[in-house]
Length: 301
Length: 275
Ligand SMILES: Nc1ncnc2c1ncn2[C@@H]1O[C@H](COP(=O)(O)OP(=O)(O)OP(=O)(O)O)[C@@H](O)[C@H]1O
Ligand SMILES: [Mg+2]
Image 1 (cartoon, rainbow over the protein chains, first blue to last red):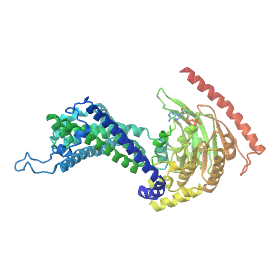
Image 2: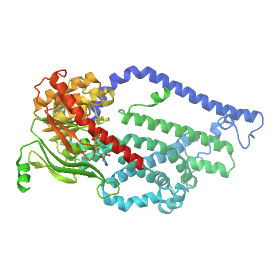
Image 3: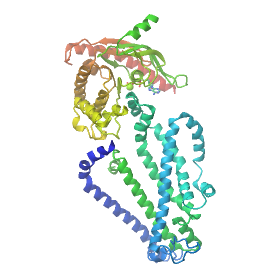
Image 4: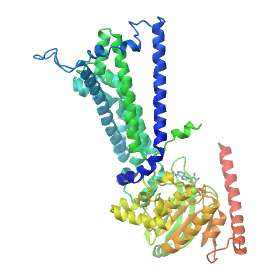
């Protein structure tokens, strides 16, 4: 239904905007570079003037200067197992990629599971009155609990590995997202529901055809806001030991007192968070082609 | 009483209201009486306009007839069937835009058919037919936010027509439009009414709109809304708004309304000074 619609209108409507949009995103990229450059420059300055000790706060040119050296620490070989040669395993660069992939995979798996689960639960709670009475108080009770408090639970249940890290992400997002789904359902324009009902829509159809599309834009925004939370939680979970991951590298850096490695990993995480936000934004634009952009209106102020 | 109920039930009228009363949030401290003792019959194909001060319960009555809310008191029939739930036979058009922004124009218009599981080809055909009646076939594949306010309201009318309703309930549908567009929409609505044979129950604040459109004008009192008078407009169509007959009717309706609007204001003022 929506595919012919997308095909029907995108080519004509998108073309006149293309160059302007390109220019805009280029400008945005330029400003991002300036912003980061400014920050890095101040840091370098602090190092030059001796304010920042290179041993404790190594400036960017030091911790980014010797990437092969840093990459050594991202070893993903299971060399503690019997019969595995310590020299085996992926090259340092591959190891960095594998580590990044593992952490990002946990973030997105957790995010996806949390989104599907919490939206389903939120919708079901509004759909079935009994479910609301049975479940909502507990969810409200648990939602202020810090994700850190769930860490031991994650380890009790899932031990060590991917599962506890994903569980941590899910549990950190789930309760808030259920509550926000419910409040968005309550805020759906009443006329939309009235129109659907006068056209003979059943309760199920009102939910599937009106309420869910109507809350989708806000849900995707909530998802994006929670993305950074997911990145934070996954590092905590990984630092307790899940084989390999960025959190584990930070832990290693801490234990071996290696500030360069800490900052190198922080830079990686920042970059990844930025990229994943961009991915979600693109996704949002694809799914919500019908939501008019208000950013342009604000810029006019 | 029993024979009266029987007469009401056996009536073939498009809408029959007997003793309708509505109290919002009944039984709570926020209870709020909106309508009292409404007896109203609307014949098939008849054009009835509701006129009354703001807050007197006109929208409430439309909601009740649409079946979206349950009346607190009284009974209601439509073509001999008791009104208990919403029905595609009675389409409601709102003042504010109520098009689904995530659907294109034609998908909006054929929403009711897709609810029934009609195939795409049929839905497009019906949408095209309904949109041609409002002169918007060219906008079929646009999204609602690409249309002007007047075009959106025409799409909303097309969406209601696509259901082939027997009763069109319209809640200040043209209030947001400029005078010229509104005049065009009125002509268009009269054409639609003639072609489809549907009854129309139309809420407005504009007395000239009431005189231009109605077979009968129902004037409401201030809240709780009761029927103050029913003024038949026996003029042939097309009507000349500058004719002395129209002028006289406008004068009469203005006088009927003014006292009620004054009362409504006095009451609202008293309510706010209480708090
Ligand atoms: N959903 C609701 N819940 C509670 N009270 C309501 C609701 N809808 C309307 N009311 C109350 O019922 C009364 C009548 O409202 P209604 O909207 O029917 O008036 P109206 O005649 O359509 O007014 P207007 O001309 O301003 O649109 C008002 O006092 C209003 O506060
Ligand atoms: Mg109203």
